[in-house]
Image (cartoon, rainbow, N blue to C red):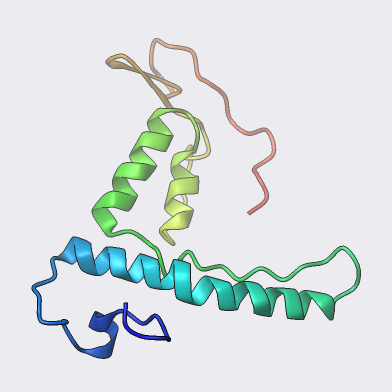
Length: 134
């Protein structure tokens, strides 16, 4: 970070005289969001929320600033799908991909077998009777 504005050197087109790896640059970017942008976002959220009717609040979505690389996102989605925490279509929606038929069914990996896949020997875990609000 550099100076009073807390802007990382790589965003100012400087390297600071040292060699930065991708992970260091990624960490600096996350720290920039966390320690520079978020405090301002919170102030603006509070100011805008004061203008709204009681019970309503403004929240900025900063997920895009801290979005991981593709491989990390895919692995995280795969783990959540395998644990039965997310359906394949929910993971596809996060990546702005079209849903597919049957993709709202929860799938869980049980050892080396899969539960929840139609046509298998194991019972299905279930499907949302009513798709979740998105």
